Image (cartoon, rainbow, N blue to C red; front, side):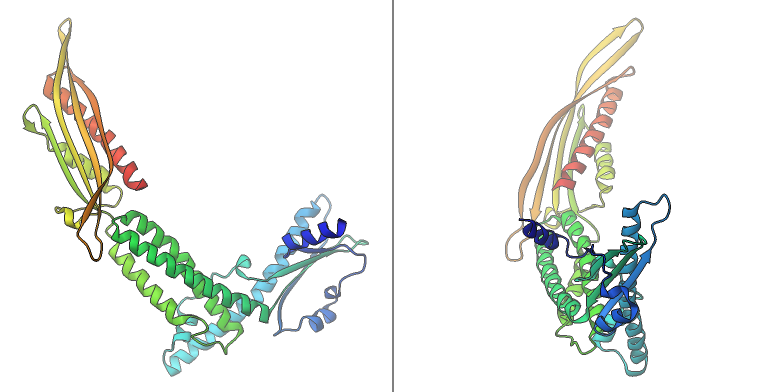
Length: 364
C-alpha cells in the first residue's frame, strides 16, 4: 500500500522530485553533474541556499527551486538569442528564407519557465548543514519531441478555432468573433516561440517539420479577419418615438450614443447589418396633480424593443432571427407641462433601453 501511494505521488508531482536520503545525489558534485548531464545533451540549472535565521524553510526551498529552473531556462534562452543573431546576419548577407523569418520576426521570445515542456526539478537538503539545493534539467531530445508535438497540436487548435471564428462572423456575431479572434493571438505567438526554440536546439529541422507554411497561412487569415472585424458589429437602428403626435428624434440619437460605446457602427440597410434593433415608443398623458399654486404633470411612455440577429450565409439569402424582445413603461413628471414631463420620461427610457441593449448585445 505504501509503495502504491509513493508511486501515485510521483505521477502527480513529476517536476519536483525531493531526495530525502542522507547521501547527496550525484548532481551535487559539479564534476559528476557535468559528466552525467553533458552540455549539448541536456539543459541544466543548479542553485543552493542556506535557511537563514527566522526564514521559512518552505519559502527558501521554493526560491531555490525557482532559481535552478530559471538557470536552466536561461541557458535555453541564450541558445535562442545566439541562433537569432546568427540568422539575422545570414539574412543580411544571403536574403530572406522562411526559417530566417521565424528567428528574426520578433526581437525576443516570450518563452518562460512554464513553457519548457519536460523540465524536471530535483531537490536535496543536507541533513548536516541544512543547506537546500535544487537541480533542474531537460534532455534536448526529449524537449525536441515535446515541442514538435506541441507545435502540431497548437497549429491544429488554431486552425479549428479560426474556422469557428469565421463561421461566427458570417453568422453576424461580430463582437463574439472579435473576442475569440483576439484570444487566438497568444496561441499563435506561442507557436512561433516554439518554432524558434525548436530551430535553436535542432538546426536541422525543416520548414515542413515546423509547420511553417501552415502557420504563415493562419497568420494571414488572422490579419484578414482582424481587418474585417475592425469596425465592430454593424447595427441597423429603427427608432420611432412619438410625443403627442410629434416625432421625438432625440431618443434615436441618445440610443446611438449608448450603443456606439460597444464599438458598433450604424448602417442604413438590414442586408448589410449584423443586428437590427427596433424601438417603438409613444407618450401618453396621465394626470395633473395640483398642490396649492403648483401643478405636477405626469406622463407615461410605453415602449417595445426587439433585437434581430442577421445572418449572411455564403450560399443563401440574408435571414433574420429574433433574439430579444420586451415591452416597458416609464414615468415622467414635471411642473411646467406635459411636454416637459414627456421629455423627462424619454430621458429615463433612453437610459433603460441603452443599458438593456448593451447587455443583450454583449451577451449575444
